[in-house]
Length: 301
Image (cartoon, rainbow, N blue to C red; front, side, top):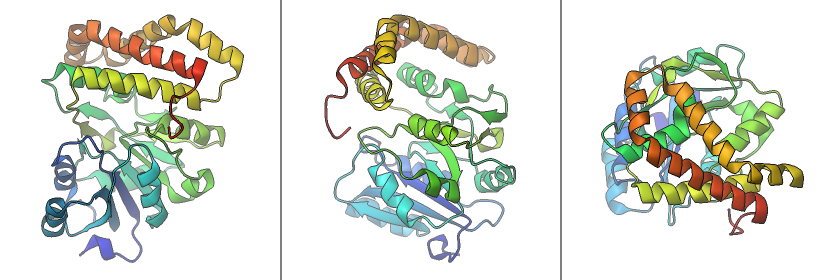
């Protein structure tokens, strides 16, 4: 069955290809996804740049993909919102292109939504275990979502692996647009409206990060600045966060340790990359400080 032509898909998968991802990252994801167990009707929407070579691969190897081509790939949530406008499923899944999933992902996803939750997500496993820079990025982004975290209700969801009921998304509106997706802030808005999140080990995915340490530092600095400028804190709170930023960085370092200490492999890598990880956290906090004091440096973020 050609899933692209399914009349009423239960699930809509959305993946926007990152402009800095490797050529075949999205194809590794699609290969890991298909075929899925359980016979669940779905559509898989991919947004990618106009490229004849890639378009041919989509057509020949992944004809079930609903491909949206764009002349220019942009960071942030603009293209995700474009895909969201045409998604037809009762459940909307957001995956990054540099991950892989299991063949029972949809079956487990449907089971998770049988409970009274508005959004679900699952553990993120580091797929690039031989790269120190990959561990640093992983610890910064996904230490709250390892397989050691208890299954059940959770405060937030991993940005590379989460899903919402479509009616909840309609109520919440679109993601904020700019150079970063800022799912954390979107989920914060959802919580304020009483939405409940569920963390299920059955939805685990592998995450592959190939940035070098200098790119990671640049990313974390700019992300921190944009994040701080979008939080909407009053002046007293912005000043407090700025003054206490070194302490905040150390608190985050301790949080990472607490979340990964139950896994010997993760703990060993944590110790190994601690000097660079600490520096990364301070760079991140410095970016936030500038965001709290001066706002963002570009209007499009």
